Length: 171
Image 1 (cartoon, rainbow, N blue to C red):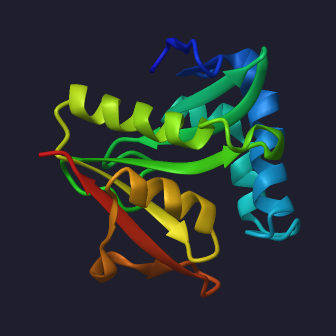
Image 2 (cartoon, one colour; image 1 turned 90 degrees about the horizontal axis):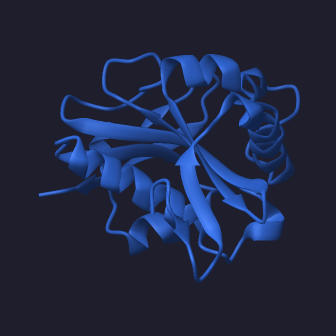
């Protein structure tokens, strides 16, 4: 479904264009702050909003429905600036955000499947991600697609927020 519209849902998953950046920034901040994952004053909000920098260092994917950006995530190769936890042979994704109005349409699943397809076609052995314990809706997507926790790779942010790593082996 990467770059192809799903005829049943009308959902298009594709690489972000510069015209999308403002919508991606607004959506990502709205989801992370609005759903209580970070506070407005958190320094991470600036990183979430800086899609121009993100797109220069990693691949940003969008989900478009009825002409509107309704979801996004960032794909990072190991050893690049946006890869926090990817080991050699792993493709990482971060900053998954789905608008409240589009939840239930398969936006998150479509975006994650696009990453899995990209990893397979790129010869990666796995896909990895970091998530917050409170992101239970996203966890359901990850678990349904076969991701499992990797507790020995869990970590904490500089301010002590506990995060955990999930991984999907592709072979």
